[in-house]
Length: 223
Image (cartoon, rainbow, N blue to C red; front, top):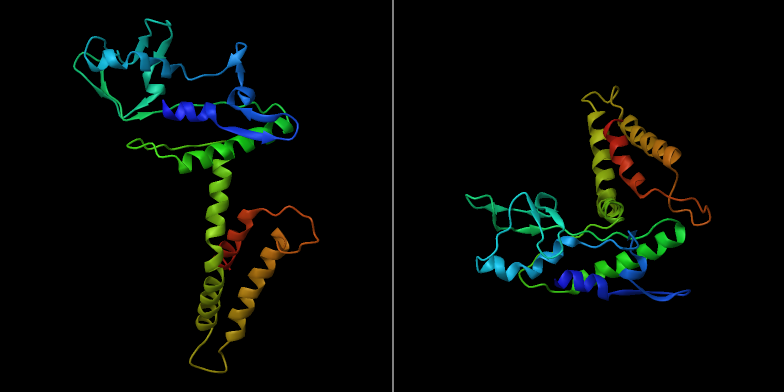
């Protein structure tokens, strides 16, 4: 398959070991890289298409390698025949494991994953849609979601200040307390800064949690 060929073809440059490919970074199982045995079925696809061989669901033994396949673990969107054989499948799940026994291996694996994501972004697989999930996908997506709210932060604070001031006003100027609403918003802001720190102090050298940017919204809401 094209995706599998791309995974094994891409490389990442390192200062100590030069170019490293998947076979250099892969997790070892039984003295060899963990591979997707389900891809061995591609040799049988022509026979499946012409009807001379059937893929039995949910288990099947490869007649060439004698490997056992549990199809629900690899295939999705299955359509079965009346005889419990696979007529078609809309999705295929394949996994590539990398070594991360220590920090250095984790850093090399992270670089390789980044190169892979960039290669998949620019590669056109025609009618095949490729979805990917790497070890840092969740962290990266959460950071993107957090950064996406920054342009709206000023507008949100302005709306909150206006709402707080208006709700503290009355028809009687003696009992009207507009400053009370403003101070409430400022109090919530100071509470967030005190609890999570101020992220834009370059000399602090303190690790800043990106998700802390979303806390002011909750703080203002429950003020």
